[in-house]
Image (cartoon, rainbow, N blue to C red; front, side):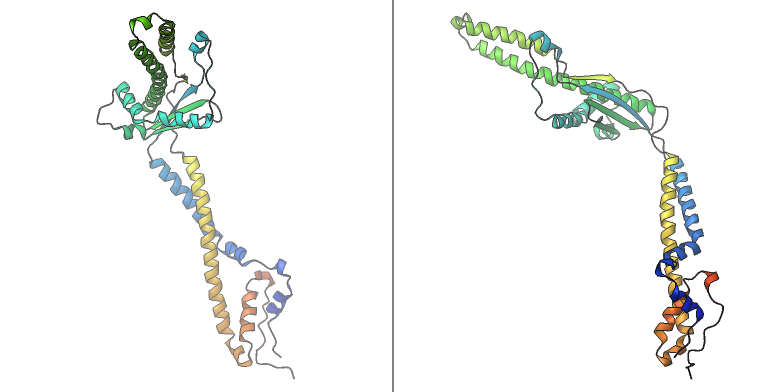
Length: 309
């Protein structure tokens, strides 16, 4: 019967819940790697954020409604929307049309060399929460340019809605005029012609008073602080990323050193192979490495070849 090291026997007597996890041992041994990686990640992120160009955001808000002032004059009501969410998404897409960008370029006097994709590159459009407000934001290196573009897109969008609403009534008025032109002199004196003239007059009045249901209620103002980069946020992200990377490196280092120690232990206890106990001895001695330094026994293991009398 072989006599085993007291350190191995004491390790076996420890409850599994009280044994030290190899991951914790690796983190405790290579804590400096974790700290160095976190500090380096934060420093790199901070330096990179300082080298980036400052970008400014300017936002204008447009209110969308279904009511028109002309409805009160004609004693009519607007038809309710069958799908308000779809209508709002359509309005958002309309802001970034190429035709709107071309009108913005003409309003601001930008050179023709500035293409519409370049103008639209920094423009973002989104509804504000669940309200009827549409937020038009432009991001640019110049805060003045960002403000001018945001307000120009808002104004041109309001004008687009107004033109589209007026075109509907103008098309209907043209149809009424066409029907009047097709009547003979006798029919022009009849009630049908009088009704057409009345409707034509109402269509012209309604068309001229259409607002499109859009109003610029909050023009963009010149921003004073950049929206990007944000050094504090970048530093926090770099710190967290460096911390995660450092933990992974420490765990890998712990695995590598643990495998090396197991091989060393197996080589040192190779004499047990003659008695058929090589696997047990190697695993026991490798397990004793998990004990805290104060718990390890300084007593050398008994020779494996000794047997009881």
